[in-house]
Length: 415
Image 1 (tube, helix red, strand yellow):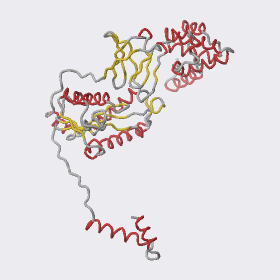
Image 2 (tube, one colour):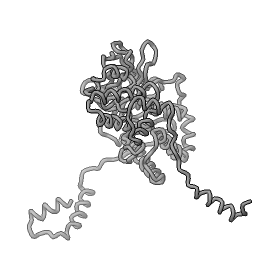
Image 3 (cartoon, helix red, strand yellow):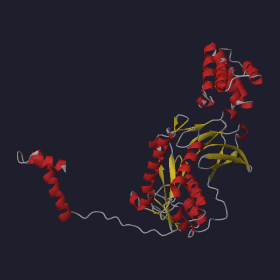
Image 4 (tube, helix red, strand yellow):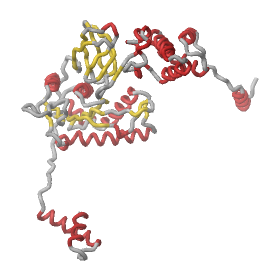
């Protein structure tokens, strides 16, 4: 409106003053009501008990949650019953089918039943959004999920969030409630993902407490859960490279070297992946999200590096061979101590081999003590510390005993 008034002032010089802006706004408002175009109408919905649920993913990053001081980027799979407003949620990192199926399984298990209809937006993990004749149809994975639970499924039109309005509104309300709880808690930092998950589950329970009466109505109309437990994962077959790694969904993982050259079955879950060979699970590791990420476990390859220390300096994934900052500090100290880089590499790999075969935490404590005391960082020194760890010395302030005696004397005397 202000831009229109400015245009009129420029077109008709000296005819309009700034004080007339409010008059123009009132007249345009009257014209819009009397002669203007029709406005969009929102149709109030009547929801039936036990009939429908909506779910969607929402980004939680703006809340600034951290795990041990490190920013924790994540999404939330959010589920709500449209009649009672009962809700559930699960932390996830991406809008993948594994996260959708795991979050839906969690919500329905908590409910103890299944609604008639499950509605989502046109999320790519459930709906084919590419061009072609199948555009807008459900994926085979999602249709199988719906058949398992005996649910009807529906999705909204692209870029029409108002059609999934209940869950969109509850995204906003839940984030506001969570933000308030974090303020009351006094910190957005959590010791672990498990602690954060428990915090969210507690908040969901508190929010759902006031909806129990309507939830009881819903549960009377829900369909029974299937008797067979759903295992929500994808499977693929890959060959292990001569570098003892596999590539899964555009990310690379290390596996035990005895698998080099064979084909293994990979089971991809929402938060982890499993590698199976001949019906036996060989290794389980956290799932990487995004593309071109790397997860290398030094235990899988260190036995070869000890025999081939020259490969360490230019190894593509060398940065992954420092389990924590203490190992990195130890390696830097070895490089400063030895004039020949290969000797520093040999020394570090020998220490890393001890961590793989004995105790990573024990070797970490040994290195911290040796670095603190400025002692030589050798395999022998670390082994000696592992055999006979030096207990942390504690200095006792003897004045505390005098204070205790004074307090006893004040109460009733000392015999």
